[in-house]
Image (tube, rainbow, N blue to C red; front, side, top):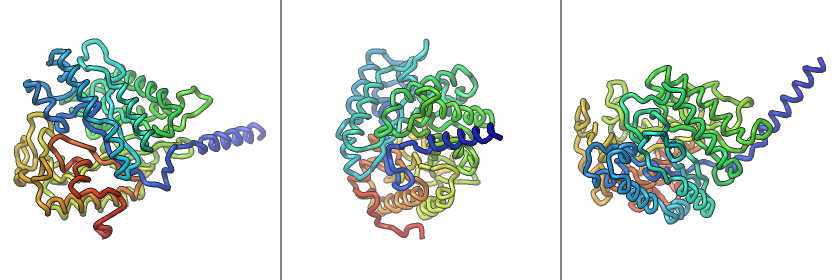
Length: 421
């Protein structure tokens, strides 16, 4: 009996110790309102198409081939200039001035680990450190998001390497390398929860590819929890939050996973787009404007009843996939039927590009759709829009939305507060 009492007492003390975590932000009482710094430390052809077009080489479709098929010095100089100019301190000041409180910063594994034969160019870490300093200066919270893993976790160009058959989940060496990067990040930020309260161990693992991916992903989330929560060893925990992605399974799939009191400081990240499907069951890209808004409003119960604290870490007011290279360099759009096998919905004219080409009615829709989404996602813990800026896709750009009126300077200043009623 004495041993049982002692064990119970020790368990109670452990729960109290875990519950004392200081998250560095009043999560639960204040909403996350933020923006992603897409296309900066991880290239994406649709965000900065000029970087890819200027190569004159159609084989260059992602960051991997950007280093592989160019002169090394040319590629390095181009990236260095891009890192110096795409996101600067001025952007952090503008984000704070827009009354946002979080930025999510994607970074690839190759910033920390390039193995023999991988053509990636390094040099991103000083900019990560600059971002931390700027976030601190302007009172923003920085979520560090591992956006690409060895072998690619999803085959998307935003993982660093576009692949028809991603291999991250198939090789233990890939997983081991990814875990090592997370340990490095955890150690970098273990005493900085006041400015880097969250690490996201992996962006968008492709759970829809099958149970083998999901099995590896679930174990990887457990491993990441240990790596992020215990960077000091077993006797002391960090305050860093672990933000796992839903692996495209929807929130109910994760019921019972990594729950309190055994796990503390676990968020779930869900990404909500309505533009990448033309299947008979979803037909997202074919929805009318009113149906897009209705679908966004329909997420409210799911957000409110999520098994973990949920943040919608990516979404957009764009309702088409018309942006140049959005589906990959040289790949067309579902909306106008130039994507292989997609039935044409309509013309992309006036739906992408510069805001100066947008009609007043289209801008009104962008405002309505944005408000329907952010108010719905705030039924959870909040939202982080993808993305802060884009070269020629203003419908995706928070910066352009601010400048052109479909995003308010204060995200609580709603023009359509009853949009979902």
